Length: 418
View 1 (cartoon, rainbow, N blue to C red):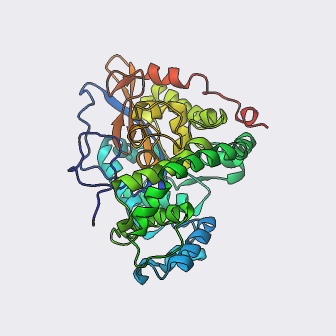
View 2 (tube, rainbow, N blue to C red; view 1 turned 90 degrees about the horizontal axis):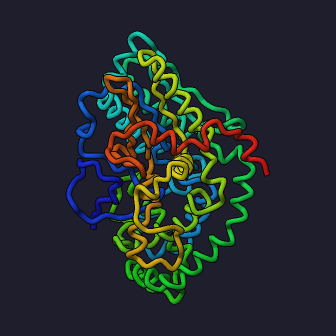
């Protein structure tokens, strides 16, 4: 059975309404069917864009490989041998960008070149008109280079700048913020309690549905952790291999959405808006840099630099927290809990399938009108999103400034102290 994976925010360029799976952070990038700029008034001039992007599809991290090896051992005789892909337990590839990750990143770069021709044309006079920055990980650097090569085939831009991990408050901020690390430990009990509640309500349903898709009956019930790992393998199958007929046959729309909810109980507290207060402000250094670049662009539009910054799923989640994107994307009030009804869960604003698929990106487009008034448009995964306070897709810049007022110019070291 084949599925079209869950689409992100609507931008008027979506395909048909086929079945979809919600695969959380392992969702492949939802490529839009067209590049729509229909909501931009003709009398506005594009001055600058600033994008924050997640790396492309990668192999499993080393800690996750242990769970996959366990599944291969415990369930190897209950699934076809073709499902047991060696790459998924190859530690030499752990966390590295996959071939599909390179391809998706390059295609995204090509679309950015097509979307913003007026920006790329400025490279002829100034190589710093468009710049690329990455965190210091193989998967982000490789993503940035694949994106840059495709977006700038004439190689006019400067090489990708890499931020050292030990001083990265911009893209890998969780590694330089002791307060966040402490909060992550503190929230684990709450996460475990909510997941236990979820398993008590939905565990039997998931157990019955997944078990019937296996080759052999077993006297031993599948554990929630085994089902969650098989769900991750489904995500990797589609994102890395475009393979829908292996692990993904064990899930349907409802069960995949339930397992996304189970995942999001953790993500929403460890990285998202329903955890410690630091989650709401840890992206302040990134936004301070973005606002500084916006101010420089407004002072001298002809020399404005557009930025593409390559980070991680948590980078985008921290960005979402500060902007309040969960309020823009959903209806259900926070927080995400294990006893949510299925219907409630479908309307929540924090959904990792929508927010942080592989290659996810959030863009801020900066415009000025003929009177030099500034406006912005926000795009999530190349689809327009309206922030609370915006009455149209292209919104006065003052709305964004108000949203960021308490965080721009933050003392990052101070707010991250334990």
